[in-house]
Image 1: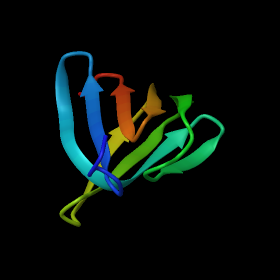
Image 2: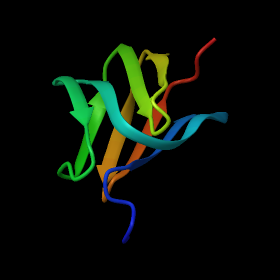
Image 3: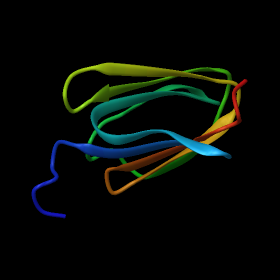
Image 4: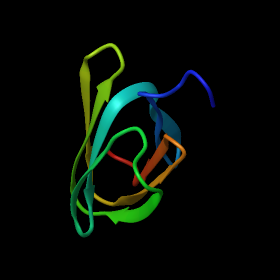
Length: 88
C-alpha cells in the first residue's frame, strides 16, 4: 500500500481480547529459535513464541512491553500479528 513505507501495522491479541493495536517502527518477539526483530520490509515469517517479552516501539516513539508464555507471530506485507496465551 502506498504511503505506508517505514511503518508496521501491529495487532497483539489474546484469545479473549486485543492487548494492543496500532502502528510501530519495530517489533521484537521471543521466537522459538531466538529473539527476532521485525522491521518494515522484513521477509514474511511465521514462528512459535517461547516465554519472554514482546516489545513494540510505536510510531510515536513509546515502547510497550507484553510478557508472554507462548503463542505465535505472523508477519507479512508489514503487518504483524502476535497471538499470545491468556495472561492472569
